[in-house]
Amino acid sequence: MNRYKKVIVPLSLQTGDQEVIAWAGKVSHMAGTDEVEFFHMVEVPEIPERAKEKYPWLTKPLDGMVKEQMEQLVRDNWEGREETTIGYTVRGGGNAVMSILERILEQGSDLVIVGRESYDGDTAVRLARKAPCSVMSIPAGGAMKLERIGVPTDFSGYSEHALDVALAFAEAEGLKEVTSLHIYNLGRFSHRIALPEEELKDMAEEYAEEQQKVFVSNVDLRGLEVQQQNSFHQVISSGILRVSREENWDLLVTGCRGRDTMTSWLLGGNAESLLRDAPIPVVAAKPKGTGQKLLEALLKD
Image (cartoon, rainbow, N blue to C red; front, side, top):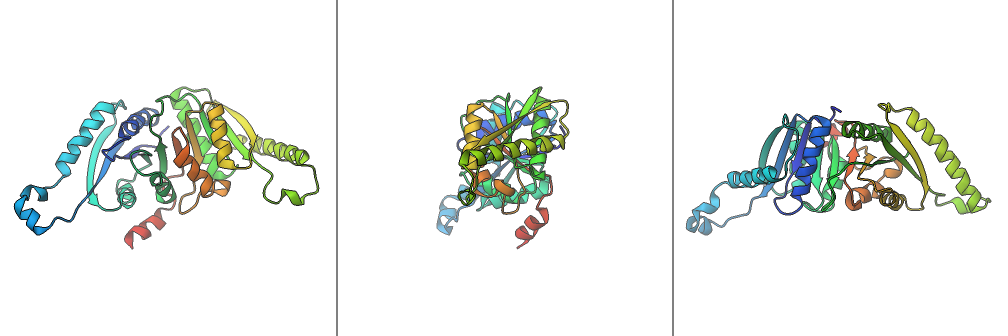
C-alpha cells in the first residue's frame, strides 16, 4: 500500500489526541508512510496594550511551548514506523478547518487523521467535503485493533475506490477478507407499485446480489476474499451502523467524492452520519487531488 505517503494529524492538545496519534502510527506501518505532520492551530487573542505593558510575556510567541506539548504527546503515544519522518507545525488563526485545509495544500497531504473528541463533530465532515485527499475520523475510546473491515457500497466508482483502499489496508495488516455491504430499501414511492411488499423486497435483494457480483469483479482483489453482504433497512446510515455492530467491524471505508456532497446514496446525511456517529474509525476515501482546484479558489478568496 503506497497511497498514504504524506499524512497530516491535527491535534487539539485537549482530549482525544492519544487515540489519533496511536492510529496515525498504525496507518504509518500499513501504508509505509514517509511523513507524518502533527498540526495545531493556536487561537491568537486580542491583548490590550495596557496588559502588554504590564505583562510583556503575554506577547511572546506560543509556538515553542505548543510544540513541546505536541512532542510529548507523540512520545507518549506514537508506535509508528521507524522510517517515518515526524514533523510539527503550529499556526495562529481563528478557523481550524480552513487552517488545516491550507496546510493540506502546502504539504500535499494524502490523508488527514482527525479525532472526533479532539475537535467538534463536524470537523471531519467539513474536511471530507473540501479536502483534496482522504479523511480518517477517529472516535474516542475505541480499541486499537484491525481485524474486520467493512465497505458500504452503492456500486459507484467512488465505492470501487473505497473497496480498493479497504483491500490495501487488509493486505498490509495480514487479513484475509473484507466485507462489501449494500443497504437496500424500497424507496419513497414503493407504495405506488401494485405488488406485495415482500415481493418487492425479494426483487430488490435479487438486484443487489447481481450488482454486488459485477461491482466486486471490477476491483483488483489482491488475492483476498470479499464477502458480499446485502441488507434491508429503510434508513441507510442506520443500517450500516447496525451491521457494523452486529459484525464487530473495526473500520469502515466509505467512498467520498468531495466538494460539498458525498456520492450517490452516500450523499449528505448518510456519509456524514458515519463520520460523526460510527463507534469505530471511518475513512472517507477519495483519490488525491479531488476538488483541489475548487479548494484553491476558495482559499484564494
